[in-house]
Image (tube, rainbow, N blue to C red; front, top):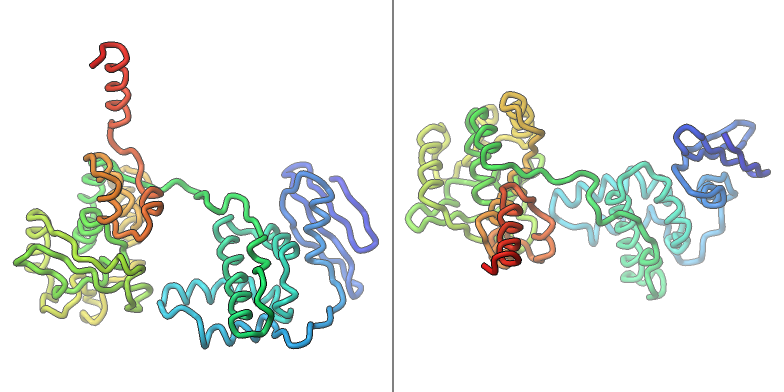
Length: 363
């Protein structure tokens, strides 16, 4: 192990895994913190400064602490949608407040914030979410007049790899889906059909009611979502759209309507018997079913969101224009549509063959 000594502590690099650690003494006790991987000792030492037991810094006059600002933000500007509030609360409670709670907002600056974010054992996208909340708090402080309007320092914070997925989205081939679906009991079989045929998020599928189905005109209205058994609005404004129901899906829904004991207009389509129909099946129940079925079907891992990725992949496979895909996926931004799906048929081989035919045979 290599050590860079200092009177204020030392950074140590473990040669086995190339991870740097920071050791320091405070109040007669030795403390340590894993910093992560850095190419140089200087960068590791810079990251260690975040954890040094420095004396409290004087608070700028008039600037509220982050903890006070968070309380006000929750009252005045926190998003109303349950799933968004739940995520924000988790980031604030677990990361922002423990680190910056007693610090004045004006003391939350770009360099120390970036070094701190680099030290967190989170994915780049999660670190970007935490940075986003710090930016929101800065904007909120300027909106309230707590600090002068200026450039938000969190705009200077960079998170490498924030736009990249840590795992590749899963799309199923037609054969994989059919094999997977055969091993799903009801109502999970019909839930999978609804998600893969309409491209619905699981929160939207579980929140469907029989009143959302227009049998005469063959339309399905997406009116709401449900997350952790909390009914809320759909994710975006563009999600509020009526979807065409094919005759095949009309028959599938009719069959389920005749099977379920909850078939009144205001009943949930996928009402839970254990909840006496007052709530639909939970997403945890669906996830459990989706974990068991792939084992029986001998296919790779399948999540509830795999159905939405599969829907977009199949749209691609049948030659659907991207602009139409955006509308069918109900995305506000076409760039979001482009992040979905994967090649699940042999269209790449077919396309390559056509190009080769043009080059060699002129046709």
